[in-house]
Amino acid sequence: MKTILITGTSKGIGHYLANYYLDKGYKVIGCSRRDSDINHINFTGFCLDVTNEKAVKNMFSSINSLDILINNAGMASMNSAILASTERVRDIVEVNFIATFVACREAVKIMMRRGGRIVNFSTIAVPLSLEGEAAYAGAKSAIESFTRILSKEISKFNITANIIGPCAMDTDLLRGVPDYKVKKILAMQSISTYAEFDDVANVIDFFIDDRSKMITGQTIYLGGII
Image: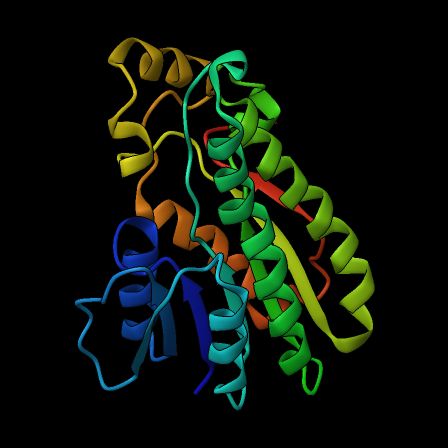
C-alpha cells in the first residue's frame, strides 16, 4: 500500500483528493489548520499550519515511509498590487511558496531511500498574468521555478517533481471574486468552463503513475492554457 501526503485536506480540492485516494486504496496522510472530518482506517490527520516549520517537520519525522507528496494548501488575495499590504503579501508567499518548499525538502529526505513523486500546485494566473493577482501569481511563479530546479536535484534519487495549474474552479478561492471577473477569466481559457475536482485528480494520477518515471519538471495547466 502506497502512502500519500496531501496538504490542505479540510476542504476543497485537498478534501476531495484525500477521499479519492483513500477510495483507490492508498494510505493517506493529511494536514490542515482545522480538524478533518475524514474518518477512514487508512487516514491519518494532522492539525497544523503549513507555515509553522517546526510543526511540519514534526509531522514528517513521524512518517516512516512516503511515496507521494501533493502540496495543495494555498491562499489567494485578489487586489491591486498598489493596494496590497506587506503583511498580506507576506502571508501569501509563506502559505503558497515557503510552505511548499519546506514540505518538499522534508519529503525528499524520506523519499530518497526508495524514490517517490511530488506534485506542486500553481495556477493559470501565472501564464495569464491576471490583474489583481500579482502576489498570488508571484508566489506560484516561484513554485514553478523551484519545482523545475528541484526536479533536477532529486532525479538521482528516482524522485520526480511536477506542477499542476488549475483553471477556474468552484472553490473558496473564487467565491469572493465578482462574477464579471470570473467570466473574464473563463473567457481567457480555451475551454471556457469551470474545471471539476476530478480534472485535477486526472492530472495528478498521470504524474504519480509508475509509468511516468520519465515525466519531471513539467507543468500542466487546465483549461487549455499554454
